[in-house]
Length: 611
Image 1: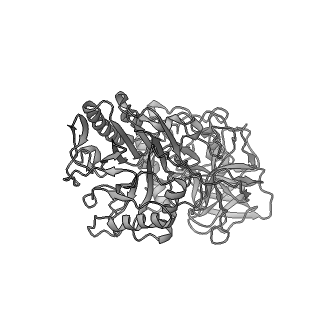
Image 2: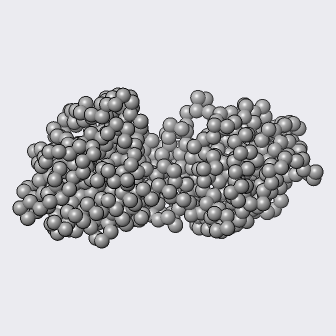
């Protein structure tokens, strides 16, 4: 969360708070002029925190290497006379707040206060950016050559991502001496503010409307066949990833469009920044050219007539105020890319007027527009079932009232309606003619449980396919909001949001165990936006006792992903099966997450099996 204070005031407040918490050990906040000549490497020091933080420095010399006239305005300058210590950066950012008056190649002398700015605020857990604030700048000469860049390559970036944090400092790495030859985050920190360069590099995170993309300088690091780099565990952070932005404002020069697997060719060069959204970022003074490698959207195989196809798809806050083009694109994907599954669990269906916060909770118009678009695209006339939430009780966009919805093809599958389900009444499990049955269908699972406070409640439904009952549970677990990032100063980072998802997983797991206690061989499918990885504690809680199996683990490790975040291809959307479903085929259908042009930020998942 960004501070509401002016940036310079926020810096002082953050440093003071950090000192009080012991997170910036050894730093001083007293503002005093240094008496000896100070160079940039003296400011940067050999840890993440400047040894001169809070002190005023005078006439620090260097050459301007980059100027930013938007966002956090300021410039980078670099000392061409390095000190020979690999741990101390020779570049630093100067925060001017207003549009800088210097140009690249200017030789300058800068006076000001050394500060540590934490993008996102201290509560974010982010590392800090060493900078000079409230500067007085003297231009000595212009047209000087920019100091030669450090070329960042696969060989120069260590495979190990980060050291363990200091237990005496709440797990922070701030006070640890940098070891740029041993850890990737230390290596990047040792270049903070310095002029760096990358050669032709594969794109592993698509370009966004914010003018950014992610590349890897390690093409062999956990690759997949479509060009991404896969996030497979908490200890495999893919150290070759690097965010790239342009120093040229988007209004002056549009940022190139890039999909995963494309290549940023030629030379990309500029200062290395640290920002709130992704951490270390090459702010390109010179930007390479994107070479299109022709990534195509996938199409899954149609189900056999004796196979039930069940899918999950997060449609990203769909509501009637969205343009018809979004409905049409999503519908076309259901028909052409997903081969019209028999049952689709949708996440993020909003109410009938979207984010207008007026108490509306029904979503019939949203669903009518979507199902009509599917028919227009050549698909089946899907029916739907859902339970309207209480107003503003399920999280998401205020007034949007997102919920899970079942679409089903009545020509292929029937829905067993059992009346009485509402936002606050939970469904249960009973034995009916020797088989497990729901007391309410559709019905919510334990909606009053504290695990679902301000979060989407699971939706359970009872379907019949070729005479066989299948119980389907649609989920949208709590988001990762509030977690510290993988570039946090605390290592390992605090994953605070996981606590809630684990509790949610336990509730769903207990429900599935109730079903299996009644009918040992019951067919149960649990699916949705789980918001967590296949190796996470959340998934472990879902599968506890063998009640469920994470079907995505049937895929090769390089194919396990449904989402791309900061250049990491990772699992968030899942389908899990009960032990009675012994044989199935699973497909993560990559149609969104790897592309700059997205209809949703999630890839849908499809499971096909014979009940």
